[in-house]
Image (cartoon, rainbow, N blue to C red; front, top):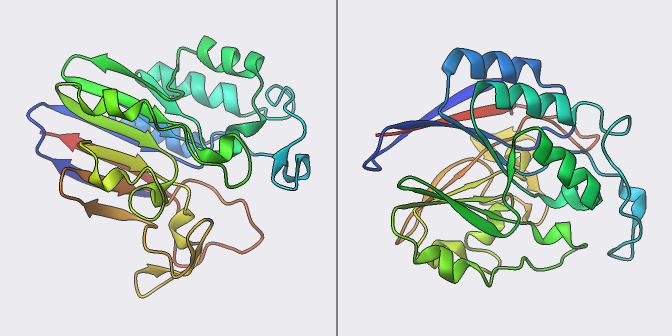
Length: 249
């Protein structure tokens, strides 16, 4: 696992940890790093769980049943371990489609704050969570109507958004919005990396543009994590898993 550090001038001092795409791993090396680096806040930008593909047919969800417990045995222990280090805020990715209402309550009972198309204020920091369109079904659009109010909030606006293609490739085109920092994952670093470029990403296809690193728009920035796991048979080559720390200064 690779640790990556960013430093952003934000008018406040705070260390953020960004976790994406852990997909039901126990993540003990992640917890060790968090205890060592001591972030003020832990941000999970989607895909905490691992979905069962057989329960999506013709692009529609056919079964949304209890996913935690014995079926996703690492999710709640991982969240509790994170919460023991720092406050946890989480948005919902495409793999979270399988979570029932009871599952979402179980997540909240760990102390994590679930941002499902909503935002909260923590001092001068405004944290939002844009739920992935994949949460609603294959190739569905995100429900982004609430972003207008989020953009108008005073302070540093930080959006957890699992899908980096929403930055500029697909609506709601976050690059053009008045959002200071977007934090994403989903692309798994492009799976195989050659000469610093990923080869494939879901929803971006071959030679994807947004697989890792920082991207700058007219109003803000996006940071994309390579994620902490793998979900397809193709191995990650030249592409270590990644835990990101962002120092606001």
